[in-house]
Structures are given as C-alpha cells and as structure tokens.
Image 1 (cartoon, rainbow over the protein chains, first blue to last red):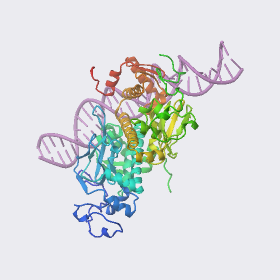
Image 2 (cartoon, rainbow over the protein chains, first blue to last red; image 1 turned 60 degrees about the vertical axis):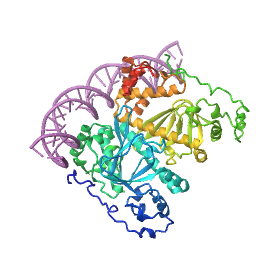
Image 3 (cartoon, rainbow over the protein chains, first blue to last red; image 1 turned 135 degrees about the horizontal axis):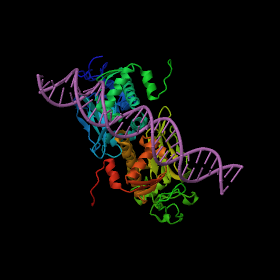
Image 4 (cartoon, each protein chain N blue to C red; image 1 turned 180 degrees about the vertical axis):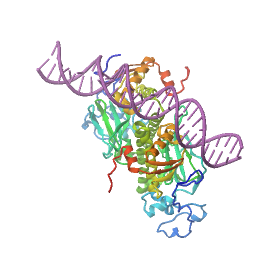
Length: 279
Length: 279
DNA sequence: CGCGCCGTTGATATTATTCAAGACCAGTGG
DNA sequence: CCACTGGTCTTGAATAATATCAACGGCGCG
C-alpha cells in the first residue's frame, strides 16, 4: 500500500470512461429520435457512454429513455477540492450526479454547529434534500477535484410526468435517501465507536466494490475529524479505533490508505450475521 | 400536578372537535361540487370541521380544495394502545393523519434491534417513508388509544397532479420529514444527554402549544425506555437527566407528568440563543 | 527551512452504561 | 381487604466508553 497524499484516486482505480474521447457519430447510431447537436456542446459526456450509468440516476433505463434523459443536462461542472456545490438555504434548481470525485454533505444546527451527514461518491446523486422545500437544507463540498452533471429539476419533473421509468428512478433515489438516513440514525443512536467505524468502512467498501474498484483496499477522502463528525465521534476516538482495529488484525490503515483484512469479522462487529462461508 | 397514570389526555386538553356531532346538511351548504353521500359513512369527521385541519395534511388549503381533499378518505380507523398501524416491509397504500392520540415510529436494524425514530401526535402524518419505495421501512405503534384518517395514496397522488395546492401540501410534508430527520441526526451525533432530553421536551412542548394545549405542562405518552431509544440513551440515563433538570429547577417531573419551569434556560441548554426578552 | 494541517498516542477527566436494589402503582385474584 | 405480580421509575456504586488536553511526528508546501 502506498501513501496517498499525492495520488488523488483510489488505490486500484479503473477510470476508463473519463479518458475515452467522444467519438462523434458513433453514439448517433443509437436507435433513437431527435436530440440536440452534440458537437456544439463542450465536453459533454453522455449517459450512454458513462460507465457510471447503472449506478447513477438513469439506472435501469432502456436505451430510448436513456437518450431522453441525456437531453436533460447540458454538460458537466467542475469543482476544485473544497468548492461548495450547494449551500444550505440556497434555492433548489437541480440535482447533481457526481461523475468524478466525491463530496461531503453536511447539515447545520441553529447554533452554527455543522455535522457531516453523508459522503457521496461518483455515480451518486446530490441535492435531493431540496426537492420538498425548493431550497436546500444541506451544504455540499467537494472532498477532491470533482465533476458533476447538473440535472435541472423542473425539466426532470416534466419528463418524469410523461415517462414512468424516469419517474421511478427519482422515486428510487428518494427511497435510498430515506433508507440512508434511517441507517445513519441507527448508527448514531445505538452503535459503539468500533461498530460505527467498522460500519463506515464496510459501507465505503461496498460502494467502491459496486463501482468496480477494490472493495477491500481504498483511500479515504476525508480527514479523521470529518469521519468523526459523520459518526458522532471525536477525531481522536476515530484515530484510536483505527489503531485498535489494526491491532486486532481487522484492517490495515496508514493515514488514509485503508485495507480491510477481515471483512467477515468486521461484519460480525457491526452485528450482521456472517454466513459461515460458502454461498 | 396530578398523577397521570389514569387520565389519558394532556394536562390541559381542549378536545372539542371530536365531541361535536356531525350536523348533516350543514356542510352541504359549502360552495363545492359533488361529493359522496356523507350519510352512509359511519362517523366520518370531515376535514372542514376538524380542529386539527391547519396542522394536518390539508393545512393551508382553501375551502374548495378542502372539500376535494376531504373526499379522499372514507372514515377513521381506531387503534388501541399498542396496536400497530404500520409494519416495516408492509406495502404502502395510504398516508395516515392522526386525529386522536399519538404513535411511535420505529426503525429496525438488520440484526433486529429497534430504535424509535419519532413520536407523532394528533394532526401529524404517518407513512411518508413508504412513498418512495412503495413499502414501509418503519413500524408505527399506538402509544395510547388513537384514531387515524387513512388517505389512499394513489388517489392523493392523482388529485395532486391536478391540484397544485394539494401537491404542495405533500411536498411540505416530505420537507418536514427530511428536516425532522436531519435534526434528529444532529441530536444523536453531537448533543450530550442533557441537551438531548431538553431538546426532546422543548420539541414536544412546541408541538402541544401549536395545537392549543399547554406548552409548558404536559403528559408524556412513552416510557423512559422509549425516550431513551429515541434519544440514543439508556433508560436510567434518561431518568437521571430528568432528576438533574428537576434539581436545577428547569423542569418539574413526576413520572410522566412534566412541567417546564424555565424554558429560556432549557433553550440555552440546547444551544439556542435566548432572546433576552421583549420582541 | 519553517509553517500549518493532519494523524497518532498518552494521561486524565467526564460522561454514560451497567448492575443492582428498591419504591411506586395498577391490576389481579384470593 | 389483602397480598402478590409485573411494569415502570428512581437511585447508587462500580465500570466502561468516550472526550479532553497535551505533546509530538510526518508530510506537503511555500
């Protein structure tokens, strides 16, 4: 495992789609109706060619719906590490699909305290918290240089009205958001420090795995303090737990490089029953 | 303050609407279009005559919309203390507006642990967690004998499509749900026991106050253990905090009877700045 | 090089949990 | 009427978990 302060990508990262150049005309061959002139758009990566497609908002859409969906957004927006994508109180105009990078979502107490409510990575959607009110209740800041696709919500909604598949996608997204929050409340309300950290690491691992990255070795994008904020712990406690888990042989951690050495045992720690092995 | 084990209503409870008998023909005079024969319905309390109207789903609707909304549900459903209204995993068919009583909402971890995620009282809506998925992720159980109005969701949605006011109501509801969850995460993640309990009491007080009950004196409907589950504390801790707050003169508590003696100080405890006075 | 941020670790303090005992109260059945 | 029971609530003492305070090392960066 290498020190990661410099490399700004996961330990084992097959990032292909973002490098593949647009090949105009090729995607035109798709059996679909009219869509805007792709050539005039600057550096737009279409959903159809995006490797994240199946993890993203258009997950499960058929080719036809996909192109329809693709028309929704005009291009990507770049964020530099630390840039804020959303501000609590800001008016809600669009959902954002993370194409590259990762962001932290945080909520604010009346007295100004800020708490991390989630970490979102490539393929995940940000901004759902604004759907209901029309204004955001969270901050979203880039943890590293990132790129997002903005999906104007009025157009999305309009399209959803006509297209059940897209409507369903939005639903699924909201559902996931609710489930995530419930899971987090469970964590904050009833888990001990070790369980919280293990749960956090397993969650990240699973998400990386689903995206084709290693599910056992990855690089954290956030500081100990941010992890602590997310888990309801102080940064020192997080650090200690990392050390303890390492001493117990469950993980290997050097700074932000993390390797899960004994996932079954980690799962056990979290209270999940571990299938003895096989199937 | 009186011991409350017997009285099943808040300390000072102006429950009028539920006693007022239906006066057939009267509401017919409302300037609205066709609606089903009210006489055949058993004991339906119409929104228009419900004192909770402005705290409930149809909050803010004009008379015309109100009648339209009123057609949505056929009647009330009674629950006895302990009855489950919703089961996690059950299919989502309707939202429920609490007309009388109160319920606790709880979420379940994979390993079976259960945690109270919220307490809902008269005028509040239950079942929103199912909107996204189509199946519920929470349990809802009556804390006392209660009565709810079931609002079939397919019909509500249909109506919302045509009526912006109703659509907006549903939105507001979802927004409130999100805000509630965020607030709870903040509480679980960054407050100490005293702050949590104070926050809990102030929250209840505010909700009672809005409903016309006393905002400084009320009766808890849940056990110490349930409070603890909600606040991420053990029941003994909850009990101790109650005692300490009482010793400090901030509250007066005897079992489930609670009186807030120094709301400003309680607010201060929670981190809210207290306006010195005036304005 | 020196600075600032980050992470680790130790010593100590604080907070919350656990274990245990007993009080209170409502309901039950003798 | 009484005793008995089960559930709830309170309280104390011991313990465990986490936070706080403080020191230091590493690393990137100007």
